[in-house]
Image (cartoon, rainbow, N blue to C red; front, side, top):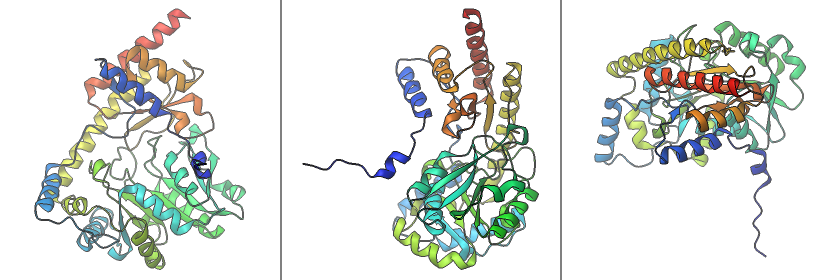
Length: 393
C-alpha cells in the first residue's frame, strides 16, 4: 500500500486564517465586485525603477549564476555602509548573510541557534511564521501573554519566570507585525541584558525598519554585536517578489551560518542581489522616504476613520503599515466578523487569530496598503456594516 502519510511536523503548522478571507475576496472580484484589500502585508508600491532597471540589466548581462552563499561581497559592503551612514553602527560585511527573503533568514536562524526540543520566547501576538520555522527544527515557540495597555510588549521584569531549561532565546520584532508598535532602544538593551544573563540568544526582526512614523528608527545592532538581526528588501524598498533579505550574526557565528547557507539555499537570487546594489543610491532612498511619508498620511487617515467608528486601536501605530484594532464591541468572533464584512461590504481584513492566542478573537489587523481615497471608502463601508448589524439586532 502506498504510504501517503505526511510528516508529523506539518500538523503543527497552522494555516493562515486570512487565506479564507483572501480566497473569498478573489472569488468576489472574479464576479466583478469591488473589493478593498486591507488584509495583505504589501503596499501598492513596486520596486523603484532604478532597482528594477538594474535587475533587467543583470539578466541581459548574464549575471544569473550562483553567487557566494552569503551574498555578493559588494552588496554586503553596501548594507554595511548603510548601517554606518543611517544608524552610525559599524557592521563588518562578513557578519552579513544575504538570504532568499527574510523567510530564508528565519530558516537559517532556526537551524543555527535552536536545538530540537528547545523553545523560544515570543510575544503574543507576533508574526506566525516566526513560530512555524521553529517547528521545522523540532522546536517550538513559547508565547508570552502581553497587554494592549503597554503596546503588547513582553514584561521584561518577569522574563525569568517564563525561561526554563529548554529555552534557547527570545525573538522580538520592531516595528511589529501585527501591531505596528516600535520598541525603544532602552527596551532592546534591557532585553539583551536579561537574555544574556539567562544564557540565551536574542533575535530582533527589523524587516519593517525605516517605516517608522513615531519613535526612534534605530537598529538593535547599536545595543550589542552579539544580537542577531533580520532585515529585508521587501518592505522599505518594496521588493517583495524579489525575495531578498539578510541576517546579521555575531562574529563567532559566521562560519556556522555560512555552512548552513551553502546547504539550505546555495545562494540568494543573483538577479535580485545585483538589483539591490542600487537600493542604497541617494535617488532611491529619497523615493523610499517619499513613500514612507505617503504611508504616514495613510496611517493618519485610517486612524481617524477607525476612531470615528468608536473602535479602539490597541497598539501604538508607530511603524510598519498596520493598525491592530479591538472589534469586541461590535463582534463576538473577529474571524466571522471579517468574513461577514467581506461578504456584505467587500472590505478584506486579517483576523487576530493569525497572530496569537490570548483574546485573539477580539482583534483585527488593518493594513493601510492602498491610497487614501480607498481607505476613506473602506471606513465608510465598515460604518455601514456596523450600522446595518445594529439596526438588524
